[in-house]
Image (cartoon, rainbow, N blue to C red):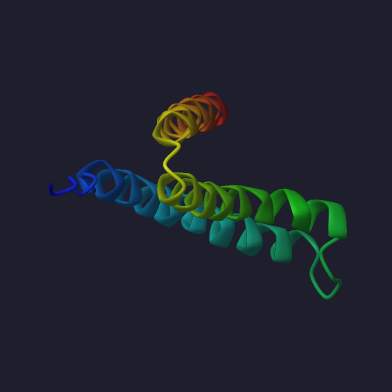
Length: 101
């Protein structure tokens, strides 16, 4: 009897979402780096502030890696929970950015 191959289209959609999220967080990273370097002209940016600037990109990359790992180990329910968490996080960031602007 043939075994059914697992469907992969949800993973493709999730990776497209994370790609869009990575482009957005990468843009925020570059903007924060530009404004941070202006604030500290001639001096290095403090480590704590650099960690805050890099955190969004690192969290997105960790989500991508964890999504692929969980999908390959067959834990799809955790993949979708992680996706929901990333959507909620993106909404919070957008609301916070809108409140600042």
